[in-house]
Image (cartoon, rainbow, N blue to C red; front, side):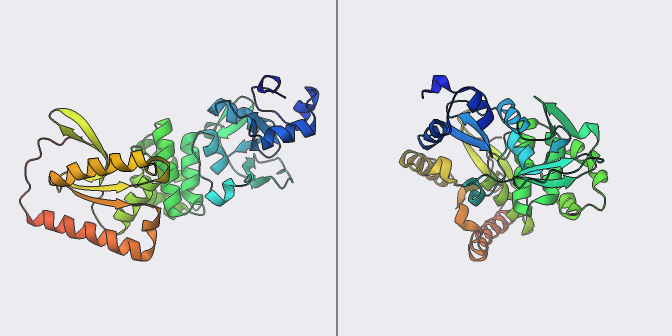
Length: 312
């Protein structure tokens, strides 16, 4: 079975059978990674780009027309991955809520219940109702753990460009909802400039420890040319906090590039603090946050130097 004989859109076993694709051939294509599972019982050719449209079409094959896709599944459709790494090895349940007056589906692969939603809370994407990016961000701000919640809200704001005013406008509707206290604390902190969950986690730890919030994605300009972009920065104190994620910082080429950039920064008066996924234990947090706090205190005691070569 070649890729050409497979649909270029999401399909179920029933659709495959209609196309005269046997279970054995489908299993073989899965083993050979020519086909991947998008959702439980939903497949896609491996070379098809996973756009919002493709994800929505996949969900429409297994979700009731009376249900609204919410929470982490909605974020996934909007292009933001919120599932934990251990969940990605399998297929996490679809998170949907039916509108009042309809019974939730009794299927193991679908979690949820009923939820009061207004028509402005969802959009229809290719036959499936999905909570808007704004509504999805607020729901996850209540539901996820604090660190993961801010990362999801940052990512949704970055990808779909809603504002703090938008968030505050809907917030009163969450009165007395479980998790609303956390949500109220997170809304002012959401920043669409964050480019990875690790950057969001790092920024939140800094703020939660009572330190000045850093500027995300600060450009260092050399001779009029934006040259180095810092994950988090205190330009007035010449302090950079960098998060090294495995995806973009694990190759030898990336490590050499990071070393060269950080060497230049240190030689030109910057303090560079590097964190990674191992930096969030109690012991590690005490170490690098203590270092950051000491450098910020030292910067307050010294008259700021001009930094004409640095700009956002």
